[in-house]
Image 1 (tube, helix red, strand yellow):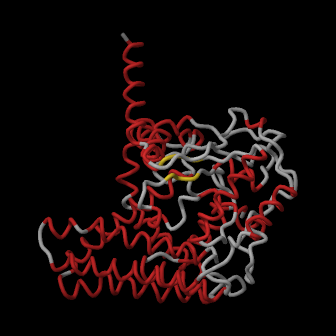
Image 2: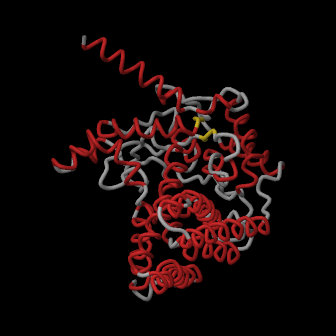
Length: 424
């Protein structure tokens, strides 16, 4: 009877997975390279391989930027988002809250454009990128661009799925791997084993509060740093000014018009939708893929680590625009300075390059990816990092940066540049 019950559960789970994968409704995609069970089967990734891909992308114009297009996109999303929220204030009852998903969609897309400014893929000019990120992040979204650059670019991008260096692996109070479970107390262990898979999505809706609190702490630390270490550049002042205006316009002004409680409720509902959308966009790209721990083994080549720990998302027809290129996570991780509108051009080039050489090139449907995230969280408490094999370890400098050759005149936003800070 127990065996029959297990088989029945497996059939139900398989049917749910199949029903949630909408990629079958899309045009047929070419076969993809998947990870071998044993990472020792991975081929070496040489400097010549990297040079060939960089040159192919450069020849295709994948690094060409169109900042005017980016500003128009941001303006449209901001206007639509604010207009929808204003419309919500004019309505009452359920009609008001029925517009929250629409407002959240516009604001999510606008927030993700700030991500492009932080990666310096919006424009060739450093000040231009900083101003663009300052409008999209602190002003529109209430998120510090300086904090995001540190957390996302320097730590996550440089060390994806590293259980120590990637802050996205362990999101308290949940556990992303076995070691986090083992050091937790009895109460949190119950959460990790039985609840976190299903609590993740409700908690993800509150991501905006965690990011804003971390933004404030990051800026406060920058302001209080010793004079010799203090960094108050234009990004710092964009953050301070933008956050003040954000909270004044989003909470202060509505409080004066409708009362503090009503303003706070509106803010909570709209930005909770944004938090849920952002989690649905980012989490399937890495969660459920191999974990690494470079404290206990040789460091993996920077490019191979991106290929092993990242996958693209096949998006249902008509929603590609809403992902701002982040369905092409592999291409984005290898070359963060490719603008979002060039990533569809880069994707077939990178896939062909990986397929010809036997490198992993992973893809999953959006809804299957969301299910896979939930399934991974259910077993994360017993997941251990992979051992890095000689076949997968570095063949050049350990900090070789995927985007070193991207045309940019600013200081490189690369694992090589950020490795000391990340280690600290």
